[in-house]
Image 1: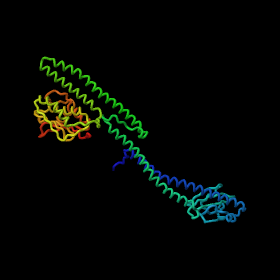
Image 2: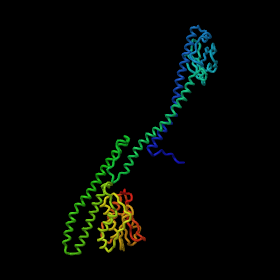
Image 3: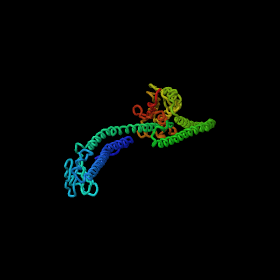
Image 4: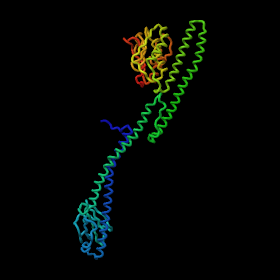
Amino acid sequence: MRRWRRPRSLFGQLALLHVAIALAAALTLPVAVAALLHRVARHYQHEVLDQQAQRVAARLHGERGDAARTLAGVDLLAGGLSLTIVDAQRHVLAARGPARPAIVAAAPLARRARMVRRGRVAAISAPAGGRWIIVSQDGAAPEVVTDDIITTFLKRFVLMLLPFVMLGPLVAAWLTRRMTRRMRTASEIAAAIGPRTLDRRLPRDTLPAEIEPLAAATNAALDRLEQAFAAQAAFAADVAHELRTPLATIRLRADAIADPATRTALRGEVDRAARVIAQLLSLADLERPIDTEAAPVDLAALAEQVVADRAPAVLAAGLAIELMVEDARHVPGHGAALALALENLVDNAMRHGRDATRLTVQAGPGARLGVADDGAAIPPERLGRMRERFWKGEARSGGSGLGLSIVARVAAAHGGALALEAGDGGRGLRAWLILEDARHA
């Protein structure tokens, strides 16, 4: 048997609470009101019986003890009354109204007035100079309207209570839904906050007072996080700019070296360091949100420019390079970062494509940029590791190991992804910079 569990949502818990309160009110209020009304009715009945007994006692004293004449001249204060005068042996000396021997037998003959009840009949027994006056009333008698009034009132009270019992939980649920909707809106805002949307904050004036401290603390944490991201991006940019001048100086010194082999090797290392610095600058630039109002990037033109820039190095490595354009789109984004990502794909294919003879740079279809080589097949376990930062594999020449990780970062900054798959016929590698989620111009 499955154990019942209370709802986890705030709306469910509040709705369940209001329903429970409404049901409890519907059950307890009629009972409490009925008990109160019956108590009031009995008090009223006691007063009527007591007053009637006092009037009979006063008249009995005036009639000099003649019980029959006393009862004959008494005005009844309410309907359904029965008057009986008995002696100490409970002999009926005089009676008026319905005979109620059970009440006469049960009435206490005490020194002061006492109440007694038998079913629907209530009676009071009051002493009067060695005799006792028993005044009784049957609540079921047609002349008695007190119980009828109580019954009618209770029925109408229940009918009047039903709309409140039904509408109460509905109104409470509606108010709770409004409150939770505001909290859900704040949750959606919080879920949309990321590295590129750190300027967003949770609303402060629309949340319940109990949630306000949490929203304030979250906003304060986002402020600190935004400052840390900005400081990190500024630090990377500052370091890259500071390193450019020393590298330029080293290159000038390298050009003056007489030994061609040493000069070439030193130039290669300087160029590699300069390329890493350029990558750092482009990554720092990615921290800025994409300006969708700026001119979109032409992926076909970008691919053509990258092929032109990297062709000398590719040809020097003994490879051929070609460009294919197939319905390429314009996308909003950072043109320099996209060019850097495509250059990294070309360099990665050039360095890691074993037995490759040709590289193919492709723009399109759609918002895609890709590079493929016709080298040897790549094992699946290597495909999984190629996205890792600083992993180099079996490269033809030195590299920083940042190429594909930077491409993946550029793709993520544009709302896309990096996809790696086997090339045509299972040979080589085809790497795609997919920007399908970017908003097209």
